[in-house]
Length: 365
Image (cartoon, rainbow, N blue to C red; front, side, top):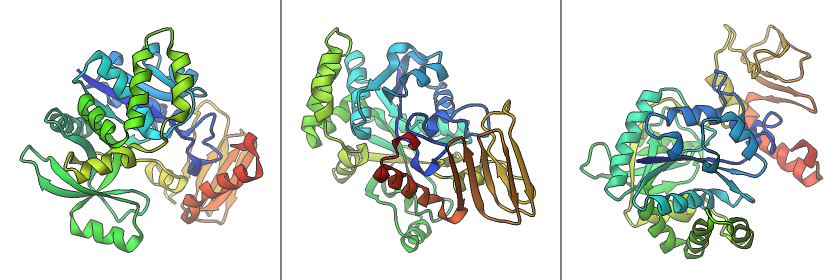
């Protein structure tokens, strides 16, 4: 049986003020369909994982919304973190719980806030990754680059393993400056790091124990108590002191150095929907390249554009949003905050969120 794990955390700060801590981007319908990003992620995994073998790891604030959006998911398969401890703890908790039920199971971890256009192609790549995991590799799905992107990490592809398209990962590379990104793409030796992982739970937990022994031991203790009356007490005792680190830094980079990581390339219309500029590129535009992100088709929203080009409008208040004689702008209108910025500065929206945190304006986060 294949187990699918969906970490559903974060607040999507580059999509503020639409995405908030209490209602982050994975709960929004940003796919061009009525489905939220979370629902779309759950749906595309259903060819290989049943509801009983699918888990969502999320925070206390989002557990109820996750349950509402995924009514077919068993209640016990929503693993609730008391506080955020980054992806290594979230994914490791799921791995430890699955291992108690099925010690040599293959699991995959897939972020709740990514977009995949070609689901059949994704499924075939995932099947190949599962084969690599069954052979004992910690697999990561790489994305064949379409352009020199500076907002993604990269995988340096090493030697083929002799099994299908699977290759070893020579190294993990951080988000590069543009000249380096261009060199990566031109070399043909690099893939985008999509943060999609597939492995046998016993192999992953052994590597977690080698590199992060205290985190491993804490998660094992929590997993042992998970189906007992002591769960909340053990969580309260152990969880706050767990190492806060991403699975990339905590396990995968070190495993790559040890030659334990494999990758398989994919071309299936992947995107992490990181900011409003990207959203404008993904969704259908009018003849002038303008995009209206209408998240609720039943809502009475109005947008009026005249002599406007490549403008992204997200109307959320019901009032008319009118733009005249402008180009390459983002306009996000919510009941308590209005954002206007050039599309070229979409990544800088995160800085506004940082400023709000410094001001203590928690009600706007």
